[in-house]
Figure (spheres, rainbow, N blue to C red):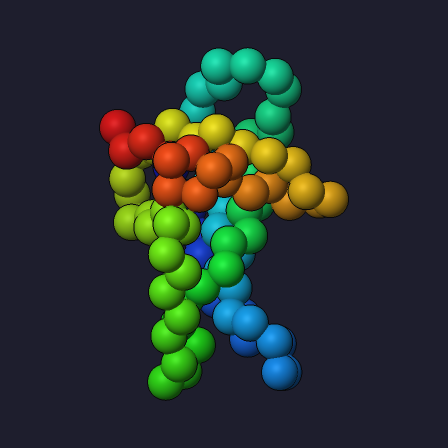
Length: 87
């Protein structure tokens, strides 16, 4: 897939997290919609930046192979940075 949109959020008094939308181009197993929404801890909000060790980093336009877990309505990358392979 290819990351297409990213939004970083800082709910009052809570941890910074980033919501990322990834366009699905191929599927190796299972069924997925044409895009998936990922939520990951970390990101930048105003003057604050939170980096979480072991979490994958995405760059705009890169192609990736992701191993995903479904959590409620969103997906998470399985096993942190080990679940993302840049192509």
